Length: 260
Image (cartoon, one colour):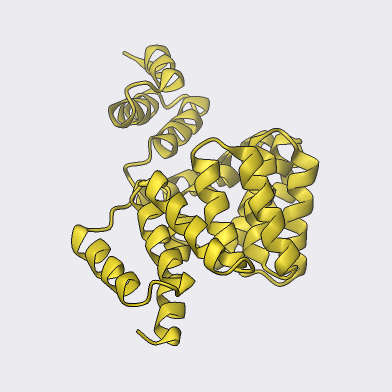
């Protein structure tokens, strides 16, 4: 396989790995094909990076970790492999190792915006919002087009009570990736915090339309209906949230409040 083909595959699988939130699967035939490429080019680190990304997307974290490590051993300056391995470390709960890999990727390539976003997420998940904000700011300042930079920065600002700024960031995320429900849910919550219930309902409705299998969207929609004293529609929304996630305690409580 030509190096340019490797580069395209690496990009496709790396993006899929980073964006995957629903346990995506890669079939056995694809793994076999990727393994065949590696067998023909055992000293090419790109092949391991591509297969590692496929393993990560399929939630085969141990195998993904091994492939990214091999890619790095073959090319110690392979910053994309460090970034991908960092994401696997995060999924495995090894935040310290993840942060080290993100930092190493940025030492090699200070303009690699994906690592700023990833490191920002690691800081946010470990309760260091100021460092997280700095990471997202760096990614945006360096020209990222990744909607997650704005979305995740919005989540930090929202948690800090800066809802107007958060709404702006969620809007920026949606302008770059309009087909996903979570920024609509997040922006709706900030609208509620500012008293904008109608705007919130509009966002929650879009979130439901985009993906009716997200329990949070139904729950959020139901909270607005309950606020409007529309108990029937509120109960319906809470019920759908519980049907999708039986452990959704807040939705069950909402059902009890609005039943009958």
